[in-house]
Length: 330
Figure (cartoon, rainbow, N blue to C red):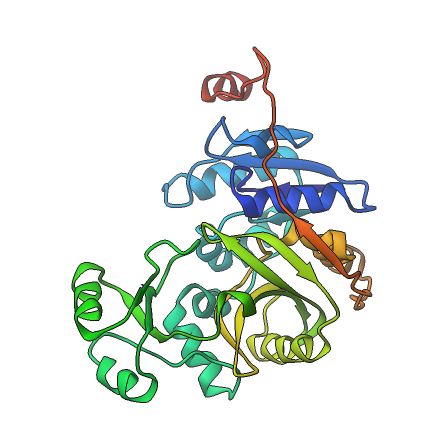
């Protein structure tokens, strides 16, 4: 069995690789990334340089690699690849015989856009964060007051995130950053959670919820427990979303209500963390998609997870270069 994981330079892609390595699956791992200096590029059994998703050559190069490697399954390891892979999933599976763990374009669109996320949750009576677009901020101020949060409609890792405490700060934020969504400030840093769900055939099959501490937009401490009520709430959101396989829900408790402020239609940056709590979502997905095994809710092991830096050492002559790649292809 072969698994192709892209985005070997991203926290997400590296987490998927680590989860697969920790699984009981005997998989050959093919990895790809645009940069030869990506640590995860040296964690696989074979590695390839892949253009950025915005590069016109991306799909053609990926297709060449799928022909050469013949992987059974392809897993995207970056957000930027989701729209193009989602739009071309049927073509990839038909042309190359490779399954792709990717949700539909509509699910990817809802998850990528924080305004659409809020509207999706609100319309379905789920735990949404009151939000508006520039031009409607007075109604939100009247309903929620200050502070408010401003963030890009499409973005990640807290880039462009800001807290505004009065109308003047809000006016400047709107002027300085086009394409933002304005939201109620909900909960607190001590009530923030991240959840993983696995959904197939419109039904959420497994969930995990962890409380987390953030640093630079990423989870650096996580606390796994059973959290039965919160898992039920996330399963309801996952049922409504209807992802194909993995989805990530980030939320805060606000007066006891889990208010979801972000959805990711993919595995999570905490995928590799969750395996320590007994939740290897990569393995569960692959076993279901390739072997038809049912996805069953695992028992969550209560653990505290402290993340830290590590190193990958590349010796002289081991660095993957575009020149070497071209020589191999010739």
